[in-house]
Amino acid sequence: MNTIHVDVVSAEESIFAGEARFVALPGEAGELGIYPRHTPLITRIKPGSVRIEMPDGSEEFVFVAGGILEVQPNCVTVLSDTAIRGKDLDEQKANEAKAAAEEALKNAKGELDIARAQSELAVMAAQIAALRKYRQKR
Image (cartoon, rainbow, N blue to C red; front, side, top):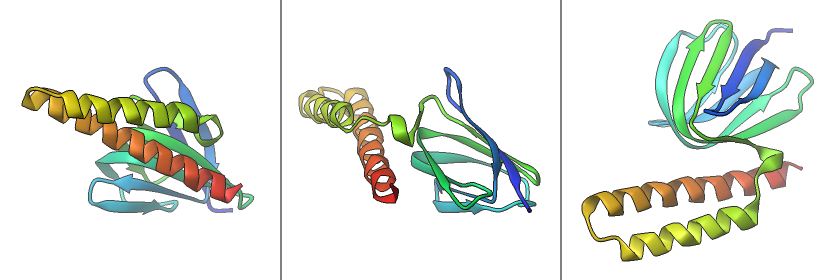
């Protein structure tokens, strides 16, 4: 079986480490698909879900709030401040955080406040989308 080692790491912990047949994730310029023996690459990634296709054909999902992707021919490393396993995503908390970000955007005074609120809103919207995608696969 032709596989590639995948590590998804948050600021707090290792979220996923194991072999995979394929990895899909949200690159800055669009969806990236990584197979074993991919050309080396380092790029930023946007908030969204990392889909890991396991050697047995099953899939793992990890939500990332953006970060850095490093690809080597035999290894994929995803580094993100925030990474949450699909099964650990909480829709109610995500919706509450999205509502708080929308409220912060309404009340934002300066450009920095607006940018911060827009960024938080984008992350929460991506997290909710990732959660729904994860639920559809179950």
